[in-house]
Length: 365
Image 1 (cartoon, rainbow, N blue to C red):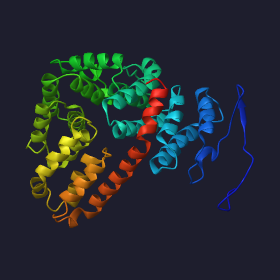
Image 2 (image 1 turned 135 degrees about the horizontal axis):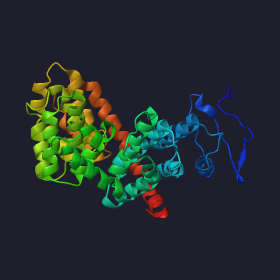
Image 3 (image 1 turned 180 degrees about the vertical axis):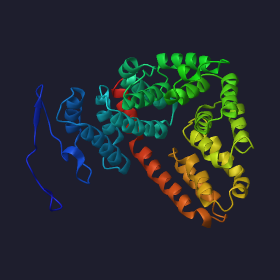
């Protein structure tokens, strides 16, 4: 038990196939982070890959949470986090994959500063989920365990975003079936993976697919499906003309004022559109203020959401300069949170960008 600021103890070890590893905070009942050296990360990772029974679900999830937080804060590095993640390809637990893919998506969003880095990270993602994509497929058998269904959803989503070839082809095929008049839409695309197929079809398609998703949004009576379509439209739109159409659509009568942030959420994850979205927010700021006067939360969303996946000091400077002569009292806290988030993310990318690229090259991506 740690009762002082420092404690020295003999490392506990476990033996599996000749590999020794140790875990601190077994079961993750302690409220602290553990900063393992690279050698320990590799040993723990090899035990995870081998399915060692002493490393439970809480341990596997907690290790990811620790290494991600330590990398973000600068106490560790993104390369060490990826060193750990690569050993999870045999993982079966939804709760672990959900956390892992959220952390990996964050890295993808922040560190894709050039095409080569972006392609390399996508390659890493494809390799990581390939076996599980093959195992889970696209069908949702009747009576299937709920967690398995959720797992399929996040795995197929990752495969689609990372341009896994078989996943892209199947998403396009099912999207085409789904959009046929009179189609059994639930059979063609289960709701759990519907957004993935919409995003894949749009990102690999053009005006036709954009219009199809837009038509679905306008005709579906279900609000959750409308929200899903709005996020997909924002996250997958590409091409200057279609991006501009999304901007015009977002503030039109077609979109309920309370649903506007869903489009912004999609755009924030769209590497090819998010900077244009931020410029558009600035150009239309007075319109947005007039629309949401008295709704402080919505104005805060309109600031934080568009930039919450950016890690560029120039955006921070731009944000500060844009609001220097504006009345911000109704959303001051959100504005400060947006600035602080940009500072943290920018420092992380500046600190770890070169290490990430080196790691990707060393691993053959």
